[in-house]
Length: 151
Image (cartoon, rainbow, N blue to C red):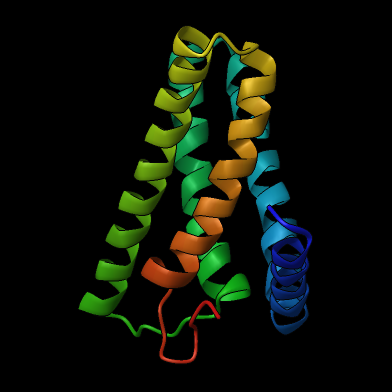
């Protein structure tokens, strides 16, 4: 990448951040809280002698539900009413998060088995990709409003 292109990309990132600062900060805060819900539920159930597979599944479901409601109400602030629009939004959320879950799952296999990267560093790198994808998909496909364009 030449220096001029790099400067243009950095300017775009800075401009995007300044226009969406509050939303990005909310996304970060509620993303961290979602992680706390996920780990907290898992640890609580595991301590209560629930099999780790069941504890993980319950933790993932509760964390995804928490993420949906916090993203809807506090990050992207969408208003869908009570009917079919809300159901459609939730279904889009499930599919978007399912897609990024597959990127995470198969991406790790690809990086470790095919490219021979370190599993831990691969997982960390993939989390960055998944977080960015979750934000973009949430903004563009899930929590959509006419004034909610990724620009």
